[in-house]
Image (tube, rainbow over all chains, first blue to last red; front, side, top):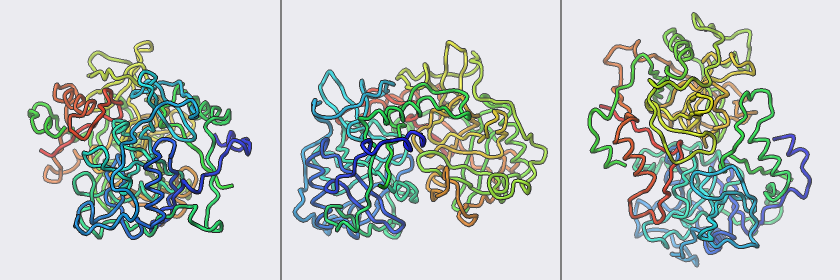
Length: 275
Length: 275
């Protein structure tokens, strides 16, 4: 895989869009999240507003459930004192469900022909793992490791993006089409995946002191150029990406005695580098 | 799922076999590992010998690679001073590859008919996730979250069980049939999955001080009864287990607007309780 990346061309990569990238600073390091406005435009817009108005600053990681998700937001809203929750400023408190969208020919799609347990068709769209159902004409972002979603209560419109989660275990694909996936972590997953698991129900921390504080979340376009990390992601509509998939599907190094011949959607790496 | 477990019968559960169960004590808590002698008999025997002779006591967690594995063993053998490695006592230094075995009608198998990207047939055998290929007549343990394997070098016989790893991310099914899977963590995964990721190549720690020490590993049958935890695992050849799978395949709670209709082998929970 490294050989393929080393041989890649400049045009195989695209820079992250500063207007759709977040930096979340935790005590141990920075998490970089890319939003997916093509799949969840209203959520991406609301999250941009929340970040622009510094909503998450001084909030916390609320929940870490082993082999499932790490979730963050306002401790007051979730568990402590709902009446004292932080103002969401000019962001919206509810949003229409953006759990799937129409398949659109303008939307990039690189087919992964290896099959999938959960969906009739899977592949990649502009760097994100996606599934599609040709019968219903719908497509949706899939819950792979590192994907970020907007937590919700029972009402479909109750997840405006104030409380976000990231997948830290085996892909919980049963969540697909039930909740708005809003993006993915492109760097710094280890700051979210290696946190102590909460001992309460669903992995919630039982004491405020157990929560990891969020120092700040910033929309990159709000930052001066000097404070931005120049990250690029491998384009998923390139022959380099297809070569990378093949190198992972059938490993060439001598260690492998048996080549898998197939690869699961959520096992395909989505490379990131600094340029 | 909890309703189904609450309604389960005593006979739906089986006690862990003390002769094939390990306690690994780390500073933050205990990890319980069940060996799979039906699939890796020589490895299980060697690991029993190593535990019986206290091989892992004062060794360490060597490697934590995000979304892949946590691995433990002798720091001297792996990185520091190969010539100073700890004696493996009466255990064997090499073992024949136990990467797959013949399908045997005496071996329990509960089919999971939901399909699989990597294997023609998958299911459960005595509490372990497995795959089978009717054409070759072979079956093997699969690399799901929490499964434990015996690290090896390039030689197929070079993984005698001294260095073990556990899956802490998306199931790396490309490893199936390439390495001996020897069992699974039945309790205490959070003590292996929430460790700081190593910053060296392959997630190895770069400094000795970063490694988590292993206090001790014991074979449960070597311990007096009073020191044993009475753990039981749900039998996978029961109607209760099938009901549990169905409850996860098609979630009944009102939160789910879209039922998946399918479930991946590695998303099926394998319940454990104290009796």
